[in-house]
Image (cartoon, rainbow, N blue to C red):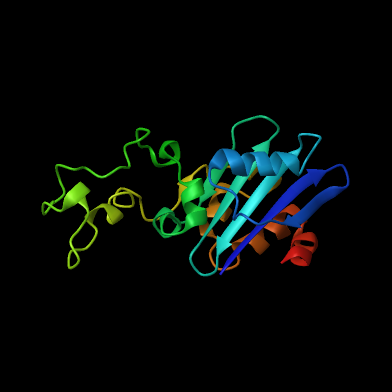
Length: 177
């Protein structure tokens, strides 16, 4: 089960809103969604979690590039929401390098390289083959907000609530959960 919320910092504290990510296809779309939540260009956090699997934090400060932290890249790579966060840059890959290596595939001569009925789809696993197990991104994404790199890396089960508590936003996050 997934949960996603926006936390926008305002003059009066943090405001939370539940968010649907069904129409979000790229990190740029997600950053635009976050920017819409704060017309004053204040800090906005996008918090995403898959229960028991992984969590991600995307921080958008005005027009700056988003800063991202993902707790377990390999787990997130198996999720459509996680794939939004796992950019080539975040994973240290050359853009476009995530396609299948046709020389390494055992193509059986079927048209357009499609696997035969009894063959597994060899291309399906190639994009996640170079995704590390464990955290990726900027572990200092919340340092100035009171969540240290060490604390962020040690969070597991209820990470989003722990982050919200550290920010003083647990009540507003709970209302949208």
